[in-house]
Image (cartoon, rainbow, N blue to C red; front, side, top):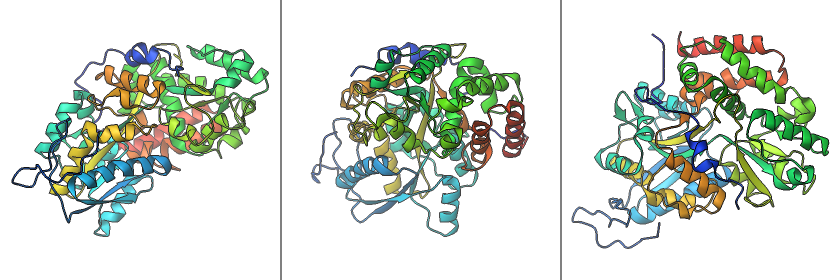
Length: 460
């Protein structure tokens, strides 16, 4: 039997992958929870008073919890502030446990050692299914379900389900169809924001002729390469093919994959269009790819960097300001509608308890999301988060577009696949696309490797 992940709403008909881009996101992206530590007012059972958003949490004095996630740097620091507010409201003590990719392997070692975290933030729907299949994940209780139902569209609920049961709370989302650029470089070059792939190639050529390398590609981290592919493939092949490839219902040797790889090679194959060339790109981390674009004044190492809304966290570490020196445009259309690929991280309970269920309930609330939204570099799929809390117009428009899209989106393809194929450093799709970046002329060989890896991972 073909192994598939419980992910993108197979019973739903998604009208088009371009809804988000055609809605609020198509507006110009280049435009520039209160604390409550009062322990009184709870009910006789020791429940903390509800806030304006209606989230009600129990008193958990003496309770200790652990939350594991792969987040580092500012992303981790900002999430810890969300946990700190949970501690204040409940009296619990929460420890953040840094995890390594692939997180399923990390959790496996913790569980084998008898010390699993209470909650894990899983970055792939496929990982949620693996956690359920292994008997690790615990279903959400009634209170967490009620909070989730109140605040999330059906689509965002469904991708956290396995076998009809709700296991995941998608606390964090991502719009992964954005290209960030150094506004000074494009202005000096006389280049404009592209709307199509051909326009992007023309913009890149104009920037190159002005003396600046067009792109910085994060080849050292395999996941940005999968995102590049997915945006090209979704726009070029269309949503139906995208879903079929995600479920391995068509092979990676399909002509549509050949076309997408050939298109990618129009950029990846131009050594002087990549900061450091292809060899340099393979040594460039995601963080460094952003730094290459927004440091160095008028002579940065690159003019553009592709990745999601979360790039803002890394831009904040430079002197560039989002909406001014750092601007963004939607990933250009490649033969069809402009692509819209989403990603996310879901809270999954591994040790069922009142405290773990309360934390899942908290993470499903607008109160929790608004704390991190104010800090930037974060996007919530929670429809009841007030968009005004986002720190700039760019992030606000991205957030409004995500919520306005409802269930009309496509989730990151590699995150839907078995983690051995789409989510493991040095293996599967990550490694094969790194090899393709090294040698973009080997389209057929890359397809064959991808198909062989998929067969092994899916079991068919």
